[in-house]
Length: 150
Length: 120
Image (tube, rainbow over all chains, first blue to last red; front, side, top):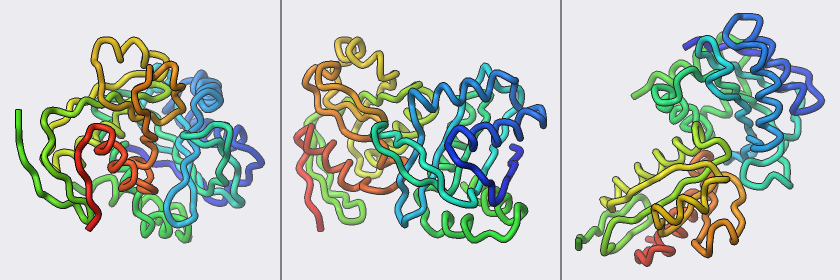
């Protein structure tokens, strides 16, 4: 699976972040032009802000398989934290540092990948490494390792 | 069906459950996050050797699924109204995605189905 990374993304809002990450996926052919509007719409109805252990928060904006050409994972580390509404309480928000945008083609074969992404969220050590990574290659390496492990 | 388990998972001990626990997992879209939460719950229950049956649905489908499936508990990633849940306990499933409060969430599930839980 391809992993695309943006480090130190400047964004003022969750919509900004979604558009930037979505554009990265779109111009590389992974998703259709409907992906960004679908993701923005989905985030409005079912927000993805997650409060992790350890003080760094994440978000998981994504859209359905009908908007995807080829599977990929786009990741952004934000220069400064941006508020995303909480998945478990849409009236509240969390300041997010790391945003993961999976482009899922086939939900059933992709569940294992998502489970591993959750393993990343649940591991404060890995989250810290992602926050401190010095370049895109490091982020890709950290994620590949976590996503590949049995 | 009667079984007995004294397995401990870290610092939780659960005692015998009389039958299979039925959990309805609800999410905004029923694909990604509901499936992952369902998987993580299954992992936790398997480790404790407690039989569980999990059905997933979208938040909007909860009331309909309750009639067909008769779950003991609903685990949801998104708020579900008491009315939609028809009085069945609704527990936040996001801790299974983040680790934050996961132990407490498991305890709430066990307590909702009458499985005794103890901290070590």
